[in-house]
Amino acid sequence: MFEEILIEPVGPAFLKYWKHYNCTGTLDEKFSSLTISQKPDESDEIDELEDEEDLSYLHSLDPKEWKDQDHYKVLGLDSKRVSANDEDIKRAYRRKVLKHHPDKRKAKGETVDVSNDYFTCITKAFDILGSSASRRSYDSVDPIFDDDIPSVNQESKDNFFKEFGPVFEANARWSNIQPVPKLGNASTPREEVEHFYDFWYNFDSWREYSYLDEEDKSKGESREERRWIEKQNKVERTRRKKEESARIRSLVDNAYACDPRIAKFREDLRKEKLAKKLAKEEAARAKIEEKQREIEQAKEAERIAKEKAEEEEKKKMAEAKKAKEQHKKKLKKVRADIWALLKEHIQSDDVVGLEKANKIADTLPLERLETLSEELKKINSSEKIWLLLDQEISALEDKAADQKLARSAEATIQTKSQKEEVTTSGELWTYDETTNLIKAVNMFPAGTSQRWEVIANHLETHHKMSRSGKEVLYMAKMLQNHGTQEMLRRAASQQKGVVTKNREATISAEISSAEQREDKQWLPDEQKRLEQALRSFGPNEPERWEKISECVQTRTKKECMIRYKHIVDMVKAKKKAGAQGTGTAKT
Image (cartoon, rainbow, N blue to C red; front, side, top):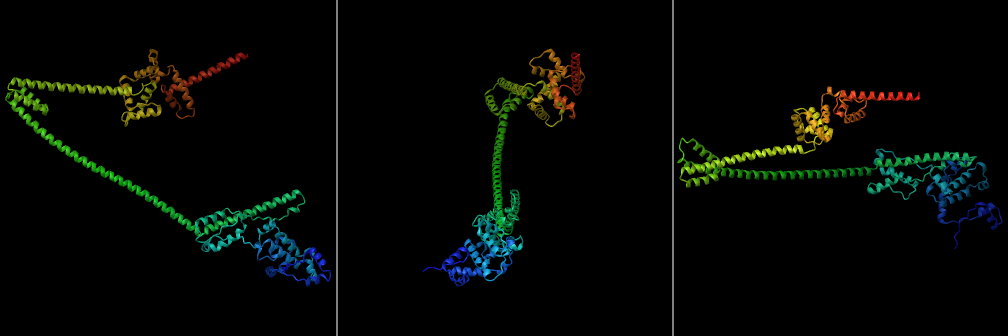
């Protein structure tokens, strides 16, 4: 009815219970007479653990070097290791205590050195594996775990899944995120493969190395020493953690390099890109062909239209030629009729009459000749005929005179409009624009290709003058006809808005030769331009005075240098006079 349970004779509580339960006989006899019953499956597990026990290993342990021992092997859990649960660890520890406790071994007659007994190693193994934190610390440095990773070679590529599969499964134990994606096989879809490598490239490991701390912080004699020990241990843990991260990264890199699926995916991607490229090129080629076809069709349509137009033109020309020939024949017949009518009234030696008849026959149009022929047929008198002829000749002469007068008037109007267009197309020429034009004309002599357009572009580029080629040509001719000085005088007068004798003298002085300018007074505009040029071009500027002279426009290089020297002398004299005045005041 009741199930017998395992009775584990361990500790003072059990001894007290046993004495209370049966006070007769010795403890050894009671131990030997005690029947221990267990569940069938628990008995099998214990037997299995007993088979795995290695007594010689326990005797080889040094209690002082407990960190170097295999705690799982000490408790007889070498086959289960990390897969052993907390109950397995507790059960294994109880069994070890039952068999290897110093009191038990002393009862059996063994000599036990309590200060250096291996039972301490069993106790330490349970202390480490019995706590989740310390067990994780020890599992992180499991001595039988293989940290090696497959290298990148042909064998790894040929046996990829066999080489890398177990390694990834073994390292999956360190992941904080569970479950860990599997490596898969050759038929694994691309999305799962990419997820696998993405997971391992961002691997979150719980593996830490506090178990390998060389010094125990609790052994520090002072707070400063304990802090120093903790700092050293932290540095070493960080270094090992970095090495572990680099190892995992190398594992993933090697797998990625050897994975035949990645090579296949790359080849598929290359083919896909190539197919897209070919499709794009094919589309571009089809577009070009379509465009070429449209061009050919347009050319063909143009050719057909041109041929049709040529045919129509030929037809029109043929019709015109035929009409012309008919007109010519008709005109010839009408003239012959008129000559036949006039022959009776013109003597053979009448040169004037013959000239009049020829002029009328050659000048009058066909319609008028037909009308004239009908009128001549109705007249019998020679006087009336000659009167009619004289009227016709007078009408011809009047018409010719009118046409000549019209052509003359039209030519006059056209010439006048062109001049008005040139003179009124823009603003009046200022003095500066006129001087710039003179310089540009000298810069681009006769013979320059498209000379006036080039001069207009030059004036617009360098002097901001918006003038057309026709305006430039017209102004150049005006300068040539009226003289440079007169045109500059006019431009200066227009620019100022008033013409005076003093201003005319000043403008004439500005356009005189360099020898006449040296002693001439400088105008305010010239002085302003000189000062601006002196500020723009420093002493180290190459060809300084040539550039200053171009900016001043109305002064030569020599005049600018003389003016500058004069200004310097004036400044020096002013400073000297000021210094003398200051000295006198102090005295």
